[in-house]
Image (cartoon, rainbow, N blue to C red):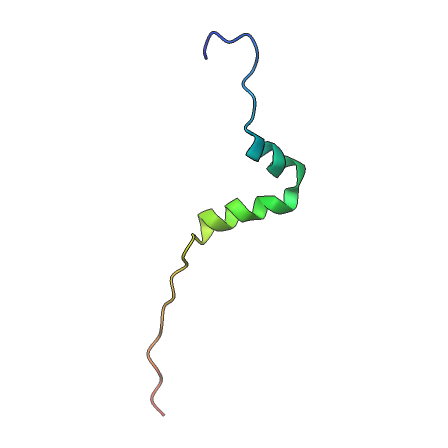
Length: 47
């Protein structure tokens, strides 16, 4: 790889993400929120 005469190519997934900017939100959501977001239940307020 270090002796390559041509620059490395991007994987197809990254090419698609570059072509359609709206799809860039999907990996950003996966990193920021995760596959299973946490659900925190707060205690009910007494009346």
